[in-house]
Length: 121
Length: 113
Image (cartoon, rainbow over all chains, first blue to last red; front, side, top):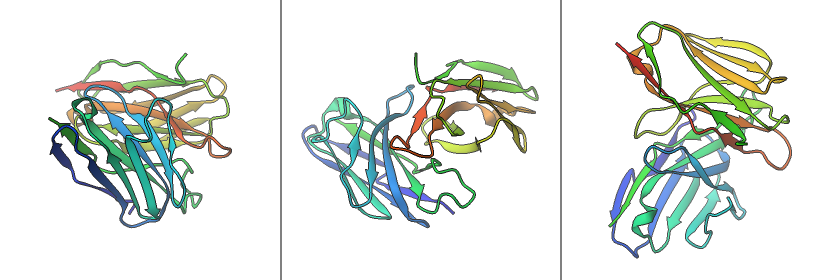
């Protein structure tokens, strides 16, 4: 159980184009999803927290107009990188928190998707 | 002071030895504590979580928590080359407005055959 998928697993695009990444919880409902970015040999950096049906909360320094997040249902969140540039090339990872948390599992437990590797040329 | 601190390593241990990974945190209101493992190029996977002071064992892994000292550790017994990865410590509050995980930068572990 607690499987999270991401699509696509990798994408190469030209500078100036927009890229959409999907994050789905396959066997549970996620009240909250998180979007992280990780540059090579660096740690996870939380970009934003996404709650179903409401606006995402962005971390300091993350441009909300550049990284558009939509959490339209309890099983799907999307991250759109608008007008991507080479410096946006990174490993983007989503995670999800199970709404049933409390049934023996910690509230803050996050289940991670496999990640999307974005390369902007 | 970082909110969650880990020694970046690399920590190198021989196969079969005990690997000890340490993490300190600054928020005394933290309630849940996690260890995730991340292989190069992959996303993190949960190894263990711990709530209460003391030890929690799961197979070759033991998590230890000391809230008074704001310290959480992970012991890996009988280390295997497949344990070579980056280990991420994450700390969170289970109530209130700031219910997100705070992540350490990770400790790189190398288990040498």
